[in-house]
Length: 393
Image (tube, rainbow, N blue to C red; front, side, top):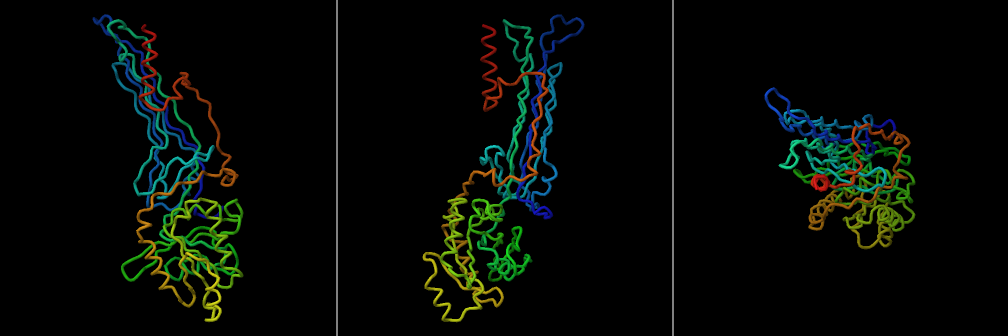
C-alpha cells in the first residue's frame, strides 16, 4: 500500500487555538480622572473542523499533513476592544470517514453526507476583560480572565467506503471478475491470491434507468479479524454496505465450511454485521454440470438465498442483480439505523509511520490547569464567578 494513492487510514495530531486573555487596562485621558476599567475581551481560539467532501475519495492529502494546528485568539485591548479570533482549520475528508481517539481507540464522530461538518476540537474561549467585573463596591478590578487552553489530541481517521453491496470472499473467489463483468470498473485480475490490494467501487446498471454501487473488498482469510492477512485493514469497508454478497467458488472443498469461516470473521470483527442482509453466490459455476450442481445444492448453508453464477459466461448474473436489487430496497434495509463503530484496535491498526506524534510544551503566560477539567463554556464561567464571589466576600 505504500505506493498506492488509495489511503484509507491516517493518524494526525490536531490542536485547537487557545483563547486570548482578557485585558486589565484602565482608561487614561486628559481631564478624565479615574476613567475606570476598559480592558477588552480576548478572542476565541480557532476550531478544528471536519468536513465531508464528495469530490474526495482518499485520505492521501492528510498523509503528508500530519500536524494540523489552529491559531490562537489574541488578547483584548484598551477601550473595551476585543481581541481577534483565531483562524479555524477545516479538514476536508471523503464522505464516510470515521474518527477515533488514537490513544484509547474510542469512536469520536463520523461524516456521512456531503458538506456535513463536525467540530472535532473546539477553540478555547477568550477571557473577559476587567470592565466586566466592575461593581459598586469594586470599581477598579485589577484582574481579568485568562483564555481557555487549547485542546490537543491525536486522532485516527478511517475511510469506510459507501456502497450498496459489499463482496465478501476468500482470495481468488472471482470477486473482481464479477465486478468487471457487471460494471464499468476495471479492477486488477490475475490467477494468484491477493490480486486486489485496495477496495474498488463499481456502478451496476439495473434494468435501464436504475443502478446500485458494488464494492470489491480484498480477500479475507481465516483469522483476518485477529490481524492475519489483509482482512483486518479492509473489513471496515464492509460496515458501510447494505447487503453482503458472499462469493465462494464452485471448486471449493466445502462450501458450507467456507461460508461459516467468512461469517465468523465478520461476527468477530463487528457483531452488528450479522444484522445485514446476506446472499451467497457460487462463482465459476460454468464448470458444473447438472449432477454436480444438484450435489452441491444439498450441502449449501440454510437460511441464505443462493444463486449460481459465472462472470465469464454471464450465467446467473441477471438473477443475481434481481436478487440484490430486491434486498437493497427491502423494508429491513430501509429501517436499519447507523452502525455502531467497534472500538479501534490500536495494536493491529497502527503503522510504523504513526510514531510521528509528539507533544509540545505549553509556553502560555497563565496556568490553565484549574479550568482544564470543565466540560463547557458555561461551567467555565460559573467556576470563575464562584471564585470571584469568594474574593469579594
